[in-house]
Image (cartoon, rainbow, N blue to C red; front, side):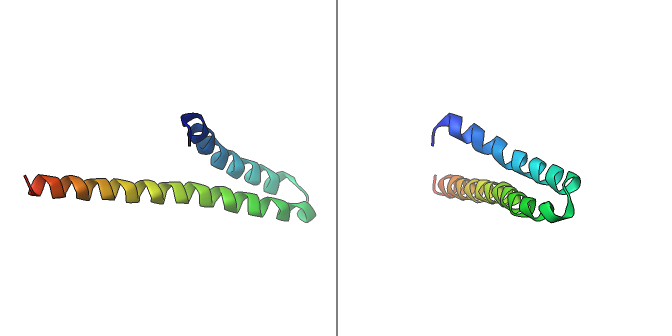
Length: 71
């Protein structure tokens, strides 16, 4: 994944959430259900990115501790 795509990925998820919130608040009752999947996917993308980041950081920390111990 190129550096440019990573930045776009970072902006898409919050934009999806914002669009879903605006759509739910300002649309009529019959059209509000269209925005629920959009908000759910945006929320999922943010959570997935955070959990991936945490797991990668944890792996790096365990590797650093392992190499410090074996010096």
